[in-house]
Length: 113
Length: 115
Image 1 (cartoon, rainbow over the protein chains, first blue to last red):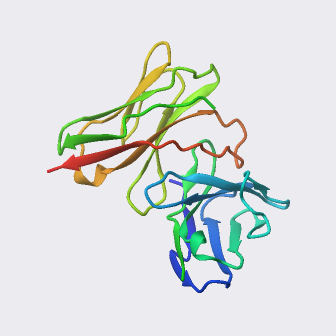
Image 2: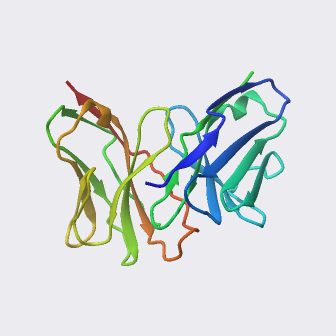
């Protein structure tokens, strides 16, 4: 099946620093990728839709200046958490659709100290 | 998207069939039923989807009632590795490849498979 990878799988950073998370579709091209966030014991919440070659679309309540999304190619989207704070600690998951089903990356565990 | 209702948790003995129900009484004619699961600390995994006919693949079977207001995901021989949160999601079908639609995850059913 289709494969979506994420890097890094885990990252610990200090408060105030920025962290970049990469999402790659390994065997298909995706004009659209999605970024989700999941807090402990909660379900996935859509943060933004990443569109190749254009600006991302953010869900209500998600700060676009804090969560920078770049979809520079048909196989790569990046999410940068800027000026991270402890409340940004979460599980970040990306996804993409090669045809009809949506495939998810393995997730990135971000811990901000 | 139509709303779905699932039991918060279920238990199943290893080797037995796990039947996970989902209610979607407000589903509209062009909406599909999708099932995903999430094993702890991993990304969700696609299982199966269907419109109105029953579907089967190597992972599971999906039974959709004739009025399409509910469905059941069947794992025919549950194993310990099937312990996960199972999400039933109703969504319009994707007509254009390479784009897709975001998924609205509810709380799902936490399935525990016991030895």
